[in-house]
Image 1 (cartoon, rainbow, N blue to C red):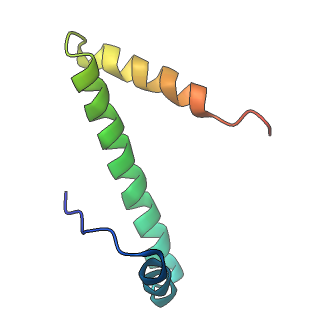
Image 2: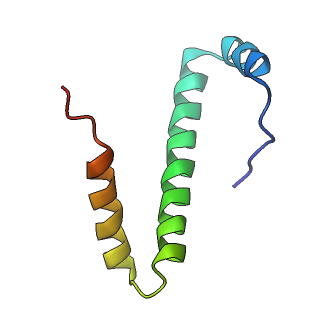
Length: 71
């Protein structure tokens, strides 16, 4: 995983404006995947006694708690 230092907000906007729609979409998918991996790794650290299947179940339960039910 190659993570670059966080730029300031203005630089982030300038970078996004230079990207094509396809590049922005691919970046969104990449960031989503990184977030998922970090979440799972955090759960493994928090619950070292759980196996992968149990971690996956906790992960799914936590995602359900985050889901916006206002739709």
